[in-house]
Length: 80
Image (cartoon, rainbow, N blue to C red; front, side, top):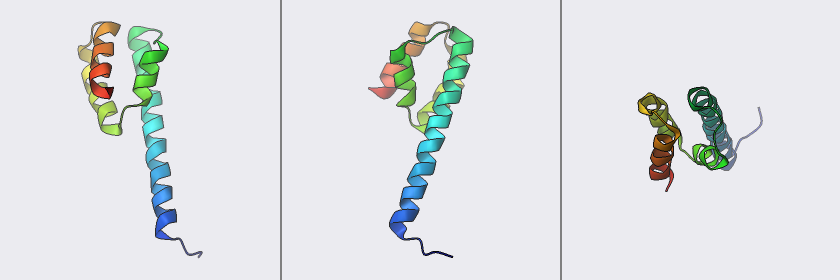
């Protein structure tokens, strides 16, 4: 078995975390498109900038949103 340095181990974990964030954002985007229709590029960019925790929070609260404007306000507060 090859020796794996702590730096390599950390890099692998960071890669996994990045993959989880990207996957979460992709799923969240699809759910929001089903709920609201097409999303603006600004909204999609903000969704990609969310942490895993923020994405989970958005997935829970999104059902309380009645318009894209409410989603945009939440995203601006979360990302800015």
